[in-house]
Image: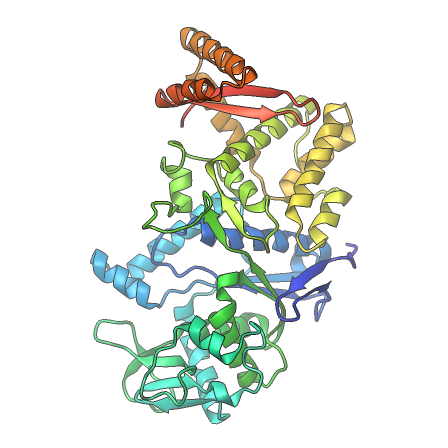
Length: 478
């Protein structure tokens, strides 16, 4: 399979977009921080899963499926897990098993492939302890009051990844001021377990059971499955500091290497309806709620539409997740599905994706440009270009969009709406609304739309970019 020399990625470590050259083309390796399994994954958690799923698919295409290893971990030992298990009155094992299964089901619904390896923190305790003991022996960590802490002062270029000053790092880390720390910036590698908490025999001769700090978990799992150095480490921008900075410190000082990962990729923050997602604001949305509950817009949404919204913005940029964007995404997927049905083609997962799609993705995962390429293929297909129709189908399959679910929902909605009297009344109201819009009577147009919405009738306005006309369709809320 030919290898494209054109893949470029923006490396947080160098702050530059640069050509991607793996250490070994026969063994391309990527690690992405996965979930802490104590609750349903929210939509912000889903963004890196979808982003790095696209990168995984691209790397498999460029280097061959058997030459790419993608590791995404599961954190199943954490303070939040302990607190939730106690709150629910269940065992930690029961909670983490259930929540991990929920996470995997939700991500599958968004079209995400399984990673090559999905290690769990609790299965790598011995790896963590060995790394901790190496750090202590090398003078990069110390034992204090039953804890093992990383000595930040032992690493001359600590902070290189995030590019922060010591003052900024102290503020960003919200460091715990503890009397046993040599420096407030020193962070925990191991800590004693409290009664009722999970625990394992402690390293470094410490009496009693303890458990690992969060940062050491990823360093140990990455080293176990990818080696002391590897190609790509990914995650949300919120992880750059302190989590990823501390991973770099632990891994480099333990292994004596110049880098941990050669390329660091970070996706931008996600907002909901223009505001930071927060339970206090009532806009905290889980993937499960979008898929199974009527959380947003009084209906559920197909996984492919959620996936498309997450890819409409380039991964490094902030993303505003809105109901309007979901509606537009679902409408676009329905149009593509109808076009392919008329063309009589289906996507081939083993086909070579269209050149313009690969070019867009090789430009730092430029998914807006990739989606624009799909629009171009759709326009050509509507003009009767059979090759473009096949290219569109293959591109949709390559990007992981499941049109079957979109189609099934659309057909079910049409079947429910097959009441001739209801259809006639709704169509008449749509005509009145169109007339109000033409007269720029936006208040009346909104009143009609809201009145129908109160009855569970959802209107969708889709503009044809070629003609500028707006087509209004309707369906019952699901």
